[in-house]
Image (cartoon, rainbow over all chains, first blue to last red; front, side, top):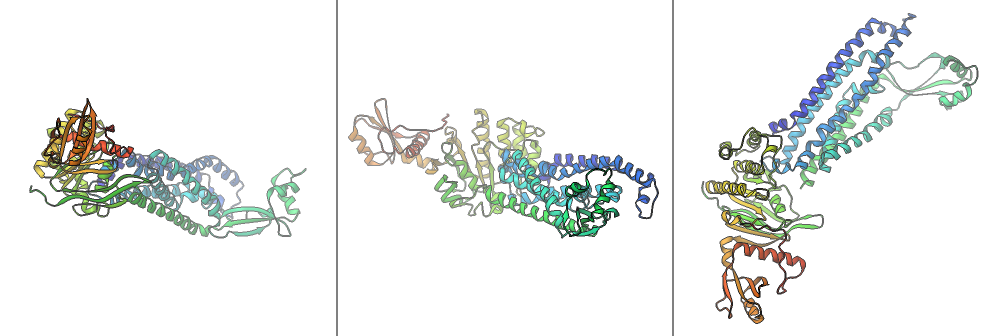
Length: 318
Length: 316
């Protein structure tokens, strides 16, 4: 059964691990480049609170400009779990049903239950290994950048932690279940992608900020950011003396008129109106808790989908 | 190998429903071990459903099916190693070479006899490095059969193995099957809507039509039990007299003559102008299939009813 699984999936394995090797080469090359620029420009020392070197703002800005595009582009790697679900998950059962070969393989001496169990073990071990490698690679690659922007908000959270394994497990299980239920490869791929996005996006945008109630801090608008770079700023608004929250648009309608040329003018105006800065954030200390919560969420979804696949193969495909 | 004993396959009121439609209903028969049985019926009669039930690809909706006493659906671990199955159109992994296909058989079956498969395919000159997708229909069928037989099964189930083969490939396939029967004494159930070739290899018959078993038993006994009577068309009373003697399976009127297929021995005294002879297997099968079809149309019992033989290919 292991031989058969390997024989059937070796092309997929070659594609996946080949692509991973290529990606690793690109990440290592660009990562080394980013690191040498980071050291060369002295960003690390610029970031320390005591450093008031006047060249620092330009150095940091230059670094951001040069590597910001790369970091933005790397967000596309968020599609890797979905691609694994499409390439490996969706055809796993559907391709057999489409070609009628389940009538061949399920009538050898191995029960279809065992057939499915071995296949699942094989593809999950392979794909989770890919996810784990990506996690390590990307955490190393992004490390200089993360000293500027933190890793809690945005794409860094999606890559630097076990949550990446959760995405991959979920995508695979979703692909397999879609294939078993729809019995056709291409529709299963489409359904898998649609459902993946329907879960993945709302979880990141709606649920992730509230796994634990965010902390809030009120501060002088002229005093700069009240939270550190490593914290995740979820929301920032203004608050007036009576404790009412005002969004940027409301403050702009008051302070956005004549004579306000710079950001500083605007903030000075807000300050004059006794507005304070109101910031909602998740402290950096919660990073691994949030990773654990989101990973567990996707693990539960993946297990439920695998249960559905097993039940469907055993009971409904009969 | 010694002849196996007992019942290889038995069904009892077996039925399978897809939604509201019964693909197979109230199916009861026994297939003793050592027999080579033909499962005959028009397309859509439930042959594939019955074979899939027997190999545990399907669960039954009603009744029971047992293979060597065990339910294929509930106990696949005990049934699967004893059953060799060749599905319709003999599915193989298209990207696998013949050698890899045999390797699959070796890896997935504890009673695998690789030498047997090699010998069979070698003799047929099938190239081992060829991908299964590039084989001819006849070669694919032979590879699928070799895979099923190398399992050393006690029961071989073949679903329409002849349907997509040309006459030469058909002959080779039946020859290979006949050899396996002779060497190993396996029990065979093979479905077909081609009647002509079957009598050469089969000793038993199960006739399915309109989701029901019409007749099941040894071919020799079935033929003994059926008689074809021919007589003048105008003698209605004579027809009635003949009918009184036995169960009439089919009546037809052609060329001014009446032909009756009756399920009984020849009557002792035939009316004037009537003659009796033993019916051929093909005549019997066609008569029953016609009966099944007219059951559906609600025309049973009408003298001169048109016999509808739906999609039944007759070759000699």
